[in-house]
Amino acid sequence: MLKILLHEMSWAEAKGYFLKNDIAILPVGSNEQHGPQNPLGTDHLIAKAIAEETAKRAGVICLQVIPFGVSSHHKQFWGTIFISPKTFKNYVKETCLALNYYGIQKIVIVNGHGGNLHALTELARELREKGIFISVFQWWPAASKLLPDLFKPEERGHAGAEETSMNLALHPQTVNMKKAVNEETRKHKMQTEGVTLPLDTADYTSLGVFGISKTASAKKGKKVFEVVVDELVKHVKLLKNAKIEDLMQKPKA
Ligand SMILES: [Zn+2]
Image 1: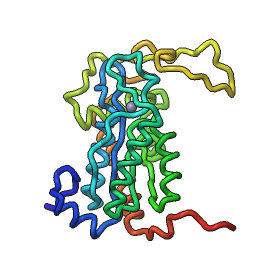
Image 2: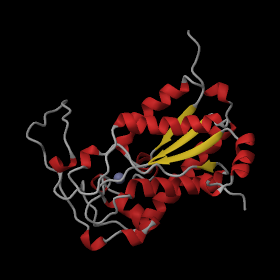
Image 3: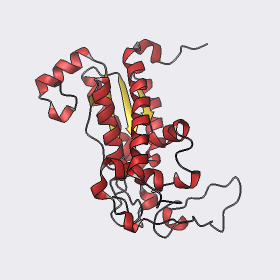
């Protein structure tokens, strides 16, 4: 079988891929607290699983996951590794530029952590000006659109039932459901409509779970995984067949 993971290929095999293809998949995530029941690696482990499965189905090369992200808002919970948005953005940028050196012009970033999105969006805009088209996929907004009835809104928060279900489906040995809790988030006394506050997870919760997590199940997690991978495969195939010229910025009006 043809290899699809960059780190498993020899340089000669990688050359074979890069000479014929202009698209790659890059998973990124974080290492941060996900409540008492989930592993710190939740966000990067899920991103890696989605990216690798998509790569196999679409026949597109997949890179190793970048495990550390923009997570300082979780730092009061032990083991969270927090990287500044600037450093994170630069690390991902240089990874993309290395791919571009070998002819890659389209990169699908599978992002497992919402805190990374701002830096990734900024990067995607910047690299589009240099002829590289980056799209960023996040599984949870896809799941809430494609499977609106599978979880209640209060099960879809950070470390909630939805995310815990994904862990149970993909790497059950890392989850301890006996420790799962349901937490109601606290309202900060400065909270007012229209105001954004620089708050951390510790301001909202005691154990790091936003909402209900006890209703998680591997069965639901498998359903989410299948549906989001299907959706992402569609996107990757569209991008694979697109002409790079058609993806670049429009000329001045
Ligand atoms: Zn997460």
